[in-house]
Image (cartoon, rainbow, N blue to C red; front, side, top):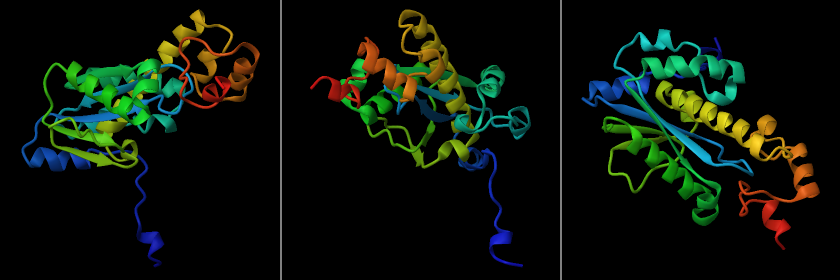
Length: 216
């Protein structure tokens, strides 16, 4: 048998990381992830999710994955289940002006810290997708592609994505000529064409290309 055939490829996030931390005595482990980091318009959203110390949560949330690997219908279907089963959850955001002023990484951290602050009960450990929160004193692990490893982070990715998508659909009514309801502010051909035809609007991130070059 070849070495490659013995490697088990993880298809869905698990609670393995959470279980190790529960065994170490941590009781409120918050998974954190963001949505909208690469968009040209709209805020960045972050969510924090604290799952219960219960092996059955894997069965209850069997359809939850990295939000990018789920369809919009799947995310909508599972968001309420995530909220119902979680011990705690919250959402924070950073608006386009903050993103322009702080930079995207600092704005990402700001949105995550706001999500943590909105939790009803303070967590005692953080599992964070990709980045670290240096201004947060809580013990934490930064996990590259964490939304594919940790169920808590994956659940947070779904809540952040569905909340931001709902806002962008709402903003499409205020700024109807850009197609925000379809592309959610990301850099599609339609979005670029709208910018060329009518310029920017109040929710564009002016520090991002191509908006930055339109100001020259």
